[in-house]
Amino acid sequence: MTAQEAEHMGSPPAEESSVPAPRHRRPLLLLVTEQLTSSVGRQVTALALPLLAIAHLHAGPLGASALLAMSYLPGVLLSPLIGVAVDRARLRRMLVSVSWLQVPAIGSVPLAAALGGLTWPHLFAAAAASGALGSVQGVAAQSCLPRVVPPDRLLPANSSLTGARTIGLIGGPALGGLLVSLVDPAPALLVECAAYLVGGALFLALPASLNRSPHEAGGGARSRVEALKEGLEVIRRETLLRRQALAAAGLNLGGGAGAGLFVLYADRELELPSWQLGAVYAGYAVGMGTGVLVAASVTRALGMARAIRWCAVGAGAALFLIPAASLGLSFPVLVLYQLLFGLLATVWSIAMTTGRQLVTPAHLLGRVNAFLQAVLTATLPVGSFVGGWLASRVGMVPVLTGAAAVALAGASSLWFPRDMLAQVERATAQPLGPAVP
Image (tube, rainbow, N blue to C red; front, side, top):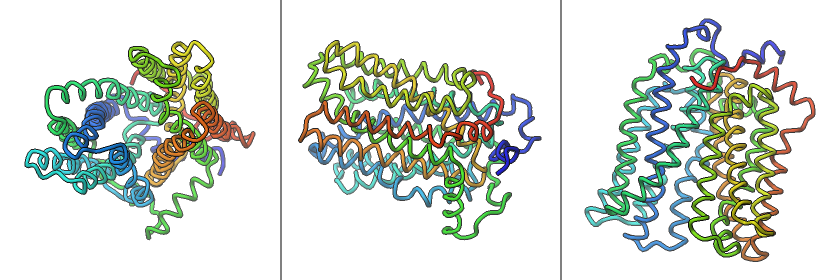
């Protein structure tokens, strides 16, 4: 591939990129609003669903863990087919349909609970269906963004979407806790149903041009097998995409192990009081919010490839602060960890997503997004499970140290081969817009 070809790969035609900014602001505003509402709804359900299983079905640790796994598993197993489907779909129609299908999938649970007929198979089926639909929506939304936002606006657009999700991560659990304390956990699930009804309406207001499939415009593989091979080929060809997958796997394996043990470690090993643990988690929210605000400036100053490299390595190295907290000054060390990890991981994620959208051809973006989403989704629970199993045998501090080493090793893969920096800078050679869309 020549540098000139790489610069335009995955970008809209020149006449579309030059469309005045106001025409791109409305679709972005719709997507940001949807991300905010759906994020709040998901966080409410993340709290209410296990509490519902405990209250109505007397769930123990195994039942609660299995319920969480069922929400992840379909997206991992179906990711290749999801990617092909997204690349061939009328995106607006798919986003609306998937959002509104979430309503009966989730709403059936409080209905069954109200009628006294809630069972474990029903709860598992609802979690699996919602997880599969959520995976489709996540891949489709990421593939939609480069078609409604010009290349020079992708970085601030991704920052805005991440900011909306961050607000949901902060406000959703608080709203969920309030609702569960006032009513039974089952009615609290209706918040997510309402969020998906609103989300479907917002998707319906997106440009009708999204219903024109890039697969039709650009040709492409005819069979599903050929389509999968075509998607894997672009990952094999693009150094940035291969390194992203490897770095994400390492960071999530190590980060998953750390996250799975974090509360237990802070409580039993460090004996942090509950108010300090709450402050530690607040530090992560502050770090994420700061990352959203500075992502465009940092990436513009360092360049896309350097921002991806340095922030990934910094996030991996920050995990060493978790076991270091056992040496003394536990509270400030863990607050520092959450601040640094939240900041660096957020900037890395925004830069990584933007780089992927710029180097991937539009008609292959669904397959590439699905593959990387599967890597991210699968490695996190695996890291959590393996970390917990090892900690029960050798102790938490050695496992947390090893988890940080795994994360740092994965992030360090972004530094090889040595010429990747020049390759990525050529492939993502787009002017970066200001931080505010």
